[in-house]
Amino acid sequence: MIKNLFKNPLAVFALTFVLFAVPLFFFNISIFDGEIIVMQGAKEIGLPIKLSLSYFIGIGINPEDLKDIQGFHLVTKGYFLAACLLIGFPSLMAYRSYISNRLSKNE
Image (cartoon, rainbow, N blue to C red; front, side):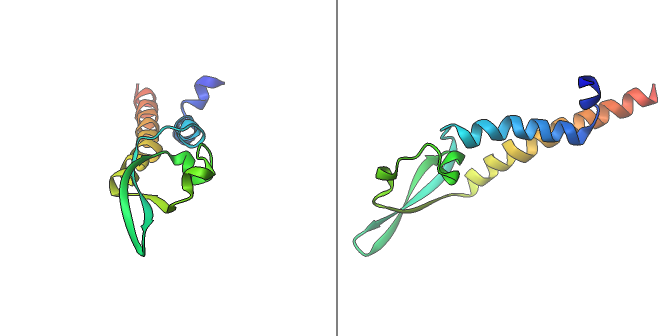
């Protein structure tokens, strides 16, 4: 049964996606390049910082830490890393499963 699961590329993609997404969204792993927007007088200033994806769903961040912060977001490099981890790697694993299935059918 488990072996049949790994023969389906969509199942492999979904499983790998979940295995990567759960820790990234539910634990405070600050590896993504981002920017916080801070008000300094009447001017908004963007400061570079490492962010965790858990901040975007409200886990792992203290409300007291946000008192002077207007907002935060990922920058291009952070979006790229998130896409690589959440879409790219699961896609490669699914493609590997697909190729493995085709090779075993040809034998």
